[in-house]
Image 1 (cartoon, rainbow, N blue to C red):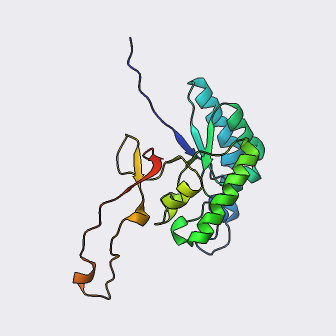
Image 2: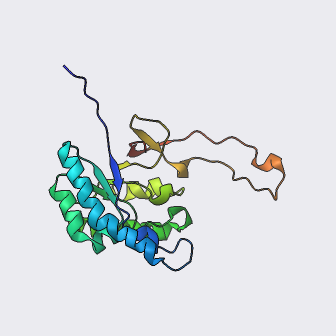
Image 3: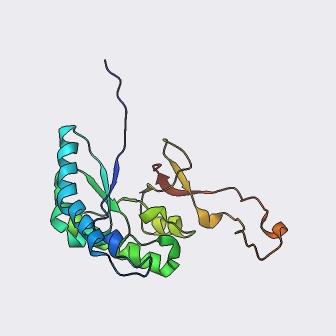
Length: 197
Protein backbone atom coordinates (compact mmCIF):
# COMPACT_ATOMS: atom_id res chain seq x y z
CA UNK A 1 0.00 0.00 0.00
CA UNK A 2 1.43 3.41 -0.92
CA UNK A 3 2.17 5.80 1.90
CA UNK A 4 0.03 8.88 2.16
CA UNK A 5 1.10 12.33 3.19
CA UNK A 6 -1.03 15.15 4.48
CA UNK A 7 -0.23 18.49 2.87
CA UNK A 8 -1.91 21.81 3.42
CA UNK A 9 -2.15 24.43 0.72
CA UNK A 10 -2.75 28.10 1.35
CA UNK A 11 -3.34 30.34 -1.65
CA UNK A 12 -3.39 34.14 -1.36
CA UNK A 13 -6.05 35.73 -3.56
CA UNK A 14 -4.52 39.21 -3.49
CA UNK A 15 -5.92 40.14 -6.92
CA UNK A 16 -5.90 43.94 -7.14
CA UNK A 17 -5.87 44.63 -3.39
CA UNK A 18 -2.11 44.45 -2.95
CA UNK A 19 -1.54 46.92 -5.74
CA UNK A 20 -3.98 49.63 -4.65
CA UNK A 21 -3.37 49.82 -0.93
CA UNK A 22 -1.72 52.88 0.54
CA UNK A 23 1.32 51.19 2.09
CA UNK A 24 3.85 53.27 0.13
CA UNK A 25 1.74 56.37 -0.49
CA UNK A 26 2.29 56.27 -4.25
CA UNK A 27 -0.43 56.03 -6.89
CA UNK A 28 -1.53 52.62 -8.11
CA UNK A 29 0.33 51.45 -11.21
CA UNK A 30 -2.19 50.36 -13.91
CA UNK A 31 0.16 47.60 -15.07
CA UNK A 32 0.26 46.12 -11.57
CA UNK A 33 -3.52 46.40 -11.32
CA UNK A 34 -3.85 44.48 -14.61
CA UNK A 35 -1.80 41.63 -13.09
CA UNK A 36 -4.19 41.57 -10.17
CA UNK A 37 -7.20 41.38 -12.48
CA UNK A 38 -5.51 38.52 -14.37
CA UNK A 39 -4.91 36.66 -11.12
CA UNK A 40 -8.54 36.97 -10.10
CA UNK A 41 -10.19 36.34 -13.45
CA UNK A 42 -7.81 33.82 -15.05
CA UNK A 43 -5.52 32.53 -12.30
CA UNK A 44 -8.30 31.38 -9.97
CA UNK A 45 -9.94 29.31 -12.72
CA UNK A 46 -6.62 27.71 -13.67
CA UNK A 47 -5.82 26.79 -10.09
CA UNK A 48 -9.31 25.39 -9.54
CA UNK A 49 -8.86 23.18 -12.61
CA UNK A 50 -5.47 22.00 -11.32
CA UNK A 51 -6.77 21.25 -7.83
CA UNK A 52 -9.75 19.37 -9.31
CA UNK A 53 -7.43 17.26 -11.46
CA UNK A 54 -5.54 16.04 -8.39
CA UNK A 55 -8.49 16.10 -5.97
CA UNK A 56 -6.80 18.68 -3.74
CA UNK A 57 -8.59 21.05 -1.39
CA UNK A 58 -6.96 24.28 -0.27
CA UNK A 59 -7.59 27.36 1.81
CA UNK A 60 -7.79 30.51 -0.28
CA UNK A 61 -6.77 33.44 1.92
CA UNK A 62 -8.67 36.33 0.40
CA UNK A 63 -8.52 40.06 1.10
CA UNK A 64 -12.09 41.32 1.51
CA UNK A 65 -11.43 43.82 -1.30
CA UNK A 66 -10.76 40.89 -3.65
CA UNK A 67 -13.97 39.19 -2.52
CA UNK A 68 -16.04 42.34 -3.04
CA UNK A 69 -14.41 43.07 -6.41
CA UNK A 70 -14.62 39.49 -7.76
CA UNK A 71 -17.48 37.82 -5.84
CA UNK A 72 -18.34 35.31 -8.57
CA UNK A 73 -14.75 34.01 -8.54
CA UNK A 74 -14.83 33.59 -4.76
CA UNK A 75 -18.15 31.74 -5.03
CA UNK A 76 -16.51 29.36 -7.54
CA UNK A 77 -13.84 28.58 -4.95
CA UNK A 78 -16.49 27.72 -2.37
CA UNK A 79 -18.56 25.71 -4.88
CA UNK A 80 -15.51 23.48 -5.47
CA UNK A 81 -15.34 22.67 -1.76
CA UNK A 82 -12.41 24.87 -0.77
CA UNK A 83 -12.17 27.04 2.33
CA UNK A 84 -11.92 30.85 2.17
CA UNK A 85 -9.86 32.51 4.90
CA UNK A 86 -9.12 36.09 5.95
CA UNK A 87 -6.23 38.05 4.44
CA UNK A 88 -6.93 41.68 5.39
CA UNK A 89 -9.03 44.12 3.42
CA UNK A 90 -6.56 45.66 0.96
CA UNK A 91 -3.50 43.59 1.84
CA UNK A 92 -2.51 46.31 4.31
CA UNK A 93 0.65 46.08 6.36
CA UNK A 94 -0.80 45.21 9.76
CA UNK A 95 2.33 46.36 11.59
CA UNK A 96 1.61 49.93 10.46
CA UNK A 97 -1.99 49.96 11.74
CA UNK A 98 -3.26 51.06 15.13
CA UNK A 99 -5.11 48.49 17.23
CA UNK A 100 -8.40 50.23 16.37
CA UNK A 101 -7.61 50.10 12.63
CA UNK A 102 -6.72 46.41 12.91
CA UNK A 103 -10.02 45.75 14.69
CA UNK A 104 -11.95 47.68 12.00
CA UNK A 105 -10.22 45.73 9.20
CA UNK A 106 -11.00 42.39 10.86
CA UNK A 107 -14.62 43.36 11.54
CA UNK A 108 -15.34 44.52 7.99
CA UNK A 109 -13.37 41.70 6.36
CA UNK A 110 -15.22 39.03 8.34
CA UNK A 111 -18.58 40.57 7.42
CA UNK A 112 -17.66 40.81 3.72
CA UNK A 113 -16.39 37.23 3.46
CA UNK A 114 -19.33 35.89 5.44
CA UNK A 115 -21.80 37.65 3.12
CA UNK A 116 -20.15 36.26 -0.04
CA UNK A 117 -19.05 32.82 1.17
CA UNK A 118 -22.09 32.10 3.32
CA UNK A 119 -20.18 31.26 6.48
CA UNK A 120 -17.80 32.90 8.89
CA UNK A 121 -14.09 32.47 8.08
CA UNK A 122 -12.14 30.27 10.51
CA UNK A 123 -8.56 31.11 9.49
CA UNK A 124 -6.34 34.10 8.78
CA UNK A 125 -2.97 34.77 7.23
CA UNK A 126 -1.15 38.06 7.57
CA UNK A 127 -0.97 40.24 4.47
CA UNK A 128 2.72 40.52 3.52
CA UNK A 129 3.51 38.49 6.67
CA UNK A 130 3.05 41.75 8.57
CA UNK A 131 1.70 41.38 12.11
CA UNK A 132 1.68 43.41 15.30
CA UNK A 133 1.81 42.73 19.02
CA UNK A 134 -2.01 42.95 19.04
CA UNK A 135 -2.68 40.60 16.12
CA UNK A 136 -3.15 37.32 17.99
CA UNK A 137 -5.22 38.94 20.74
CA UNK A 138 -7.51 40.42 18.07
CA UNK A 139 -7.82 37.11 16.21
CA UNK A 140 -8.92 35.51 19.49
CA UNK A 141 -11.37 38.36 20.10
CA UNK A 142 -12.97 37.75 16.70
CA UNK A 143 -13.11 33.97 17.17
CA UNK A 144 -10.53 33.11 14.52
CA UNK A 145 -9.45 29.51 15.11
CA UNK A 146 -6.15 29.36 13.24
CA UNK A 147 -3.42 31.44 11.67
CA UNK A 148 -1.08 30.65 8.75
CA UNK A 149 1.55 33.40 9.17
CA UNK A 150 4.10 32.40 11.79
CA UNK A 151 6.98 29.96 11.55
CA UNK A 152 7.91 28.80 15.06
CA UNK A 153 7.88 25.25 13.69
CA UNK A 154 8.37 23.91 10.19
CA UNK A 155 5.45 21.53 9.80
CA UNK A 156 3.52 20.72 12.97
CA UNK A 157 0.57 22.81 14.12
CA UNK A 158 1.04 24.48 17.51
CA UNK A 159 -0.61 27.08 19.71
CA UNK A 160 0.67 30.37 18.37
CA UNK A 161 2.42 32.48 21.00
CA UNK A 162 0.73 35.76 21.85
CA UNK A 163 3.31 38.53 21.30
CA UNK A 164 1.29 40.93 23.45
CA UNK A 165 2.07 38.67 26.43
CA UNK A 166 5.84 38.65 25.92
CA UNK A 167 8.37 41.33 26.65
CA UNK A 168 11.32 42.37 24.61
CA UNK A 169 13.18 45.61 24.22
CA UNK A 170 13.35 47.15 20.77
CA UNK A 171 16.86 48.09 19.72
CA UNK A 172 17.13 51.84 20.20
CA UNK A 173 20.56 52.96 19.02
CA UNK A 174 20.09 56.36 20.65
CA UNK A 175 20.36 54.64 24.06
CA UNK A 176 23.30 52.81 25.63
CA UNK A 177 23.66 49.22 24.43
CA UNK A 178 23.00 47.96 27.95
CA UNK A 179 19.42 49.25 27.57
CA UNK A 180 18.53 46.99 24.66
CA UNK A 181 20.80 43.98 25.21
CA UNK A 182 18.19 41.89 27.05
CA UNK A 183 16.59 38.52 26.28
CA UNK A 184 12.99 38.11 25.26
CA UNK A 185 10.63 36.71 27.89
CA UNK A 186 9.09 33.27 27.53
CA UNK A 187 6.32 33.26 24.94
CA UNK A 188 2.86 32.36 26.24
CA UNK A 189 0.52 30.31 24.08
CA UNK A 190 -2.75 31.75 22.77
CA UNK A 191 -5.91 29.85 21.84
CA UNK A 192 -5.19 30.24 18.10
CA UNK A 193 -3.74 27.22 16.29
CA UNK A 194 -0.79 27.95 14.02
CA UNK A 195 -0.48 26.04 10.77
CA UNK A 196 3.08 27.06 9.84
CA UNK A 197 3.55 29.04 6.65
